[in-house]
Image 1 (cartoon, one colour):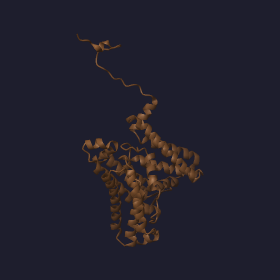
Image 2 (cartoon, rainbow, N blue to C red):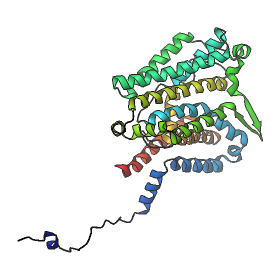
Image 3 (cartoon, one colour):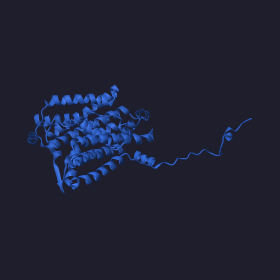
Image 4 (cartoon, rainbow, N blue to C red):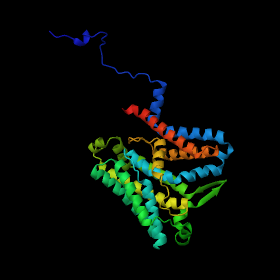
Length: 351
């Protein structure tokens, strides 16, 4: 004798099973919205910051010169953040980006000014050095299977030591650059309109982010970068050559650092082996505040650009409000903690 055990269940209903989605709360809707649009968090923070500091600091904050000055101040860190964001998208981190940039600027400067090599050769040689430094980082990570944090912490010290050794800890003066290789300072040239002063370095930063946006959103390489950061093992099973992708990411990041080196010479007006010493942490700050997940695989490349602008707006607004530099650093520290906390909250959807 057969028994219909299903009919023995209480409140049994004949027919196919149905799965109903529970109504989401307002907080859940917000969480899902930010999960689908990770860049919206930094956009909202940037807009609120502009409004608040505009009210506190008054018309000085909205003056075209001040707004353009913010863009100038974040241009180099923004370029470094562009390269850093590629690496963080793969669930890695690079503590050597600033050291690569400074080493590359020293190479460009010494080749063009000290050795007298034509500028159209010195700059590509600098690009090659930056790309090779990125290649070295990528190869050490993929071959030795070491965490990117450890590898790049080591290469940061290596590149910094090579920088001081090669330069003799001596700067190349702006006058010497002007007389022998003025093209090195080209990105420091200003465009003046309606009281604002934009440098070519600021425009370069925007171009770098636009090119990376296209590569990440319109090419197979970009999809591979996101796939590796989201789940490396699943990406390998899907046929993606993950080690090759990782090496290429670090090489592109090294090239971006070299581009930033050229722009930094124009920004500083000289070649200094000890400039932008805190660029590593500042680039990570811009990426984190910009909504790119430290766990990889999620975030928009435009987020770090907005993150850099948020830091610039905070520093400018607090300075115009008469706040001490110490408390400016204090505020940026809280921004980082809040940004990571929001990222963790949003990531709960995928867990």
